[in-house]
Image (cartoon, rainbow, N blue to C red; front, top):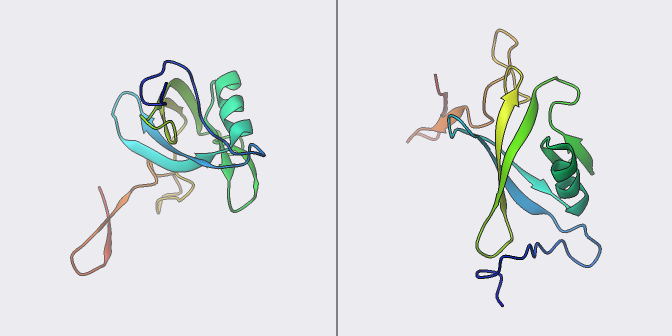
Length: 128
């Protein structure tokens, strides 16, 4: 049976379990998109086990449990998978001040990494 019609989880993390799968993280209440990150098999399994969003950091080349150092943890309420089983959505409850590592002028984090919009003149504008 194809991945689109099976009830069996068939995520493909590659031969060495290191293929990265895109993960959209969304606030379960507000539906705001918080983060787009990636998970390898180890990060996915840790997320399922701990119930906290865990990703694979491409820049640091290591597991990254969101909020472990900042306190801005993301409690995973539900994991959704797309039809081809090659991307995920984590529906989360934020347990902190924000989800983004970038800070506002007052030092508090933005609630989402998508805090700016692209204007027609290619400038970026912070969304209020």
